[in-house]
Image (cartoon, rainbow, N blue to C red):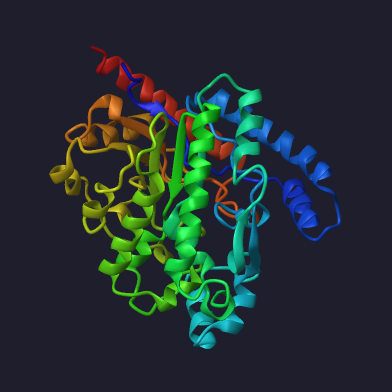
Length: 387
């Protein structure tokens, strides 16, 4: 029988100043890949030590080698250019309005970078995450989770009309290559023995709850988006084209409401009700969801979809100094037992602890203590619900 209340993370871990400096130096051509790997290897091992100490059972490498959870693909795919939002603003139809939005959302335009398709995409040797997974496998006997960008996120963040249209006249043209690359990646990870592949699609909440004219920092091309229903159906189509028929590996989709700022009032608000009809149609096993803050809404929206998917349940807020009590995590988890079996509930933070390399949302000590609280709560829940 599957483990009840499996403890895991969403993916990213806080990055040290040394690691960020070496990442920037590598991107600038000031150091070789070998020197960066030496620093990044140690960062991954420290992240793994932290997870082991905290009782995490399904581990990640903390995305320590990545600039952020999706823009890192510029190092893995030819045909992409990494561009800061401050540079992309030159191509915005209304730059002044976009700058105002960034200030309101507490987004640092100089630090947030997006991968833009400027030529035909060609996957490099080693794929998007195969080398990362191989290194982690050498240093742990635990099952591992590998997060990769979802097909909708990658398509919408990479297609920017003024820069992409020569290679890809439409988003759909780009999506065909994105789906192919991601599908091959998942199969390769499966064949390596990876336990869980998580596809990150955080912008789906922006589609549903963002203002009609809003452009999100993660996906500047959303300024050209269509009706939200059309966008959600596009996301569904891309996900199912990517994963259809792949077995032998657990697949999840991660959806949140933004994880770039500690200011809760600048992050999106709204329950999962409008998203669930689409999410449950995705041919994946688990919904990895932010549920630790009031912004995520009520639990009862899952009633209609009880038992249709597993849930990766966000039970701690990665952006606060407060360490959630074990009792509060246990109580929150029990609310979901109305709709999910114990073996179908994984416990994790809402999001990562270091979404963007230069924008950690927490420090390593606080993050470790939050994971310890999750592990302790899982232990109590297993005692209570042990058959």
